[in-house]
Length: 355
Ligand SMILES: C[S@@+](CC[C@H](N)C(=O)[O-])C[C@H]1O[C@@H](n2cnc3c(N)ncnc32)[C@H](O)[C@@H]1O
Image (tube, rainbow, N blue to C red; front, side, top):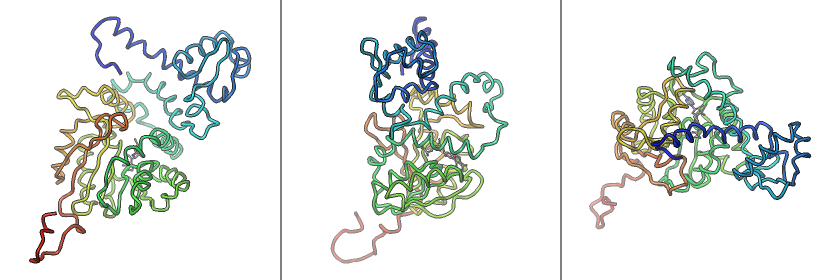
């Protein structure tokens, strides 16, 4: 994403970026890639099948080919690899849950003025329904199913036996950690409709047998149990600084001595809190959809962690291009020594106490 606008033509181009978005969303709404499937189509036959005008479809498909979603040869169109898989409802790699969320976001962002005026989310008077929670949870799974295994493979858990995926939704990250750590047991904590989705997903994985479920509103209740690692991914931005600090204190109480709290989020990295652009723009989503959410810097999050008793706070480096966010992981250690690494005191030879 090009972050800086210095000329009028760059300003015009940035404002007009909605054109490609609208073309892609129109294609999703018509389900073009599913209908195209694995064959080649002429415009007249595809227009008849989609019940749209030939003129309209011709211009839409040309733009989809320009963007790389379709491939054009002469007067015939077929799917690109992406179109044939993630955008095709008849393929096992279809990301329908997340695509549905992207489709609804268009109409949500049109209402930005409402949230700017009120400071409240656009649907602040609509309670969370189980159906919405289920749809959102599938969207989260379809968003992260490729990223989660890549991230889990790069985070050593140091022999941890238990992990809590707090606000884990579909449990995609918990499953990825389980797959990478054969001795690990994990629990996913979320609202009941989200956990139903997590159960469905876990049932399709061998490692899912080591996953358990904690139905809870952790903003209202203490976190039960005691874990070696608590993974808190994409939840920090939902809450205000005060709410996050209250949650950090609960996390601290739910960790074993010396246990690790690992936070993944869209952190802001520069002094003024403007970049990466993706993290600044994500704050707008939080204005639209949450009561007090925002995006935060690692330094302010570190200060909240210290105030909640955590120490040894550090960034975890993930290979560029494989993370959920740019430089988006922070690890903190709960007070106390990990119990199983406390060696018995001995005067015998050797230096086991120094290891
Ligand atoms: C943006 S999703 C992130 C899901 C997952 N951790 C990931 O990184 O893909 C946030 C999740 O946190 C859950 N959540 C937020 N606040 C919660 C609370 N107070 N109690 C239980 N779950 C909560 C939501 O239901 C949702 O599943």
